[in-house]
Amino acid sequence: MRVTKIQWIAVGFALVALAVFAKRVLTQRAALQSDPNGVRDSRDYDRVLGPSREPPSDHGPFELLSKSATEQSLEISYFSADSGQYDSADYTVEQVGEDQRFSTDAGRLALEGMALILPEAGFEKNSRREPERFFHPDLAPYSPDEVESKFRQRWERQISVDSLFPTVRFLFSTPDASEFLLQEAVLFDARTHRLLGNRHSSQGGADSPLAIDMELAAWHSGPVDLVVTAAFGPVEQHLLPAEEGAAVRFGRLEVKLLAVGEGVQNGWSSSSNQGTNSIFINFEHNPIEEQVTCVFATYPGAGWFPISFDLLNADGEVGTSAGSARPGEIVLVSARQARDSLAAIRINHYPTVRRLVFRIPEIPGMPEQNRGVDNLFDVVIPYSQVHAEFEFRELISKTVQMSIRTGGVTGFPARYFPKTFVNTTAREVLNEYLAALPEKRLARIDSETGSIELEAPLAVRLLERLRQLTRRFIRL
Image (cartoon, rainbow, N blue to C red; front, side, top):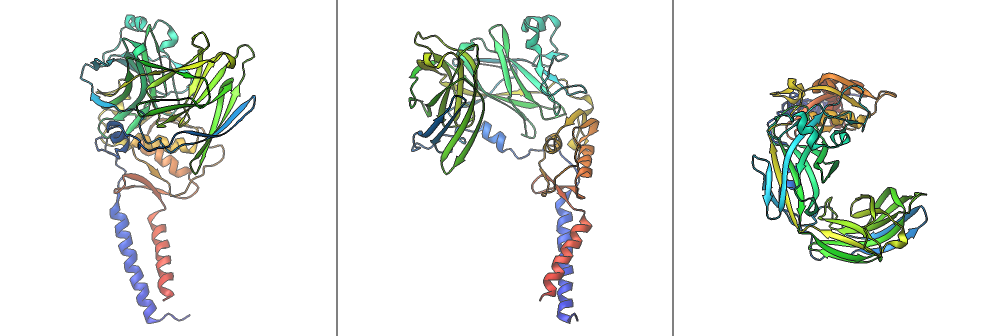
């Protein structure tokens, strides 16, 4: 086919457009640099430290649409608006002083110490280990006598560890635990405002401090903000009859008993379709003792609420707790007692909520080689093991505090995992990830979004762009 003069001119325009495209691509991309002092996307930080989000006053009541029960399962469908974006109660945000002690008429909460465990070879996922040292808030180490006095039982010192990031424990004293209810604990990088961890477990008793454990998604030292949401008394109690449909309201929080199942829940799944929510619950039956589970719905459906539940028999005795769960707007509360003996539910309401910000200069025990690092891609990871592709990306993105945009290219060779890294920089881990991808990709920092973009090599992208432009103009 003969190419006309007009078509050659069109090709020339295509080349000019390609040059403009190449210049834009090159100027938009930055070197692999991640500043440990620069503020990132702070939506999580701003939300947690912002005002409480009150739900609309005209929301509809819970409505149980259907219920289907067997000896082994319970399925319920109910109608409720999407309420997870709202808070269950009003709260105030307070910065705790350098002494790390909060005290008002509402109650008291004091940070007493912390401990850290780094992953290392031989760790099994979710195994329990005792840290080498516990530290006071001023970073001075606990003496052996202090450790013995704080933890009467050896198991109380142990921390459940993972293989991806360090695990940190924060210790708190709660002078009157009966008038205190832990709601949430969230950890942020104080400089970048990046989310570093959420509470994943807590323990404590009358003779031991409250312990909050969480993954610490970082390998370098620096100041952190530990934000603890706590509800204080005086406790207000309300008796709810053990009748399906019974409901009570505490301020903006509404609680409704949807169903009662026999046994302890050992798994659940949920779904939603055009305003109708469904949950399917499996029950486990103990042949030695009888057990019961109450299924509540709450509005709003945020991840915390300033109440606790006691399941009572006809004599007002509290059934021994057998666990609880919170799938969205649903609350599952189990007790070791017969279903027929369940007479009422006592709901304990803690009316004063405070969101307390503890500024901690650093978490002691982080790798010393990363102290003062000025580029998070140069952070050294002493030991970490990934078991899936999403964990691989998570190790990179959380370490450098940047999201990864894969461009749809995924898929690793069979039997690739687990993959272990020992004394490896974040940059080297990223290179390992790129080398394992099924298609050649390069990593670039998008200066506009602050994210890592995985792209084909520039020559490949330019050639493809040239083909597209040429075909477009040849058709003219």
